[in-house]
Length: 361
Image 1 (cartoon, rainbow, N blue to C red):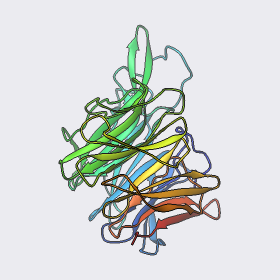
Image 2: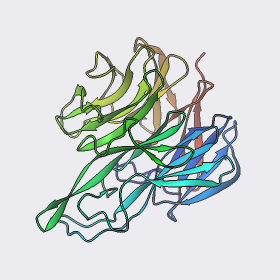
Image 3: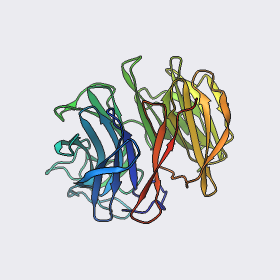
Image 4: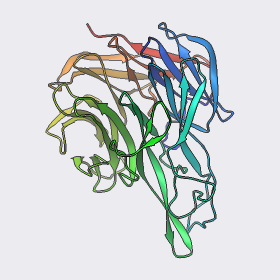
């Protein structure tokens, strides 16, 4: 499998995990052979059965439901006939959702970029995955899967083309694999965009999203263009995950000047800021049982963690250490028992450790 060591926004993601509603997990990992493997883990976080192998040059995310699992990954795409106005050519790729049933059999696959046999990445109007900023995340509303990801868009400029970066959200029916219009989806959102995150909110019946963007240097909502909080474009502005709050609204983690903050917001601007103890550029936020969330961040060769109340934003208990290295883009997922888990570097180049933070009592 690919190494956990590279951590840039253009490096491949080594692994992703998802809770299985029937118990256990689904684990996806990226090989060095342009294959993504997807396997089941039991309740002891041990691999069971034979993994399914899928074509994929980069892994993005994995989410599960009672009938199976969906993997978000990239595959090679056609380049098209356009000529770059400047810069160096790089492979053009397409973003795909792939659906497996609980036995690991593929049910459907659906491209969520817009490349075709007649529209390659270098053709005007193409929305595809290029070399820069292309992480993606999945959310599930009980019927449909939403893919929110960073992408490239090609624009004609005289006799050549320019390629710009932003993000895109597309929704696919979990049963049929058909693209679904509406449902908060959009062709093009934040630009330029990085650290794009999504969650499903059953209270409002909507997907909620945040991005980091250099459009006015802020954390923003891509669908409504509203500002959550203003930052400074000094190379240290980074966004984090979005978690539903106990009261209406959401919490999101972000950093600027190597200081991680939590922001509470509902429809627009933040109405509460929590300055955390995390002095870093990147952090991870995940729901952690009823009324709590877990913030983690790199701390030397280990991972630091702190629990917060999703109602008040106050810290719960003290900071603690998880004895594995943090990875900038590998995210933890929440489980029905109140625990959270994430994959981490194993004891060898061909192994993965599953880190599980047990429920807080």
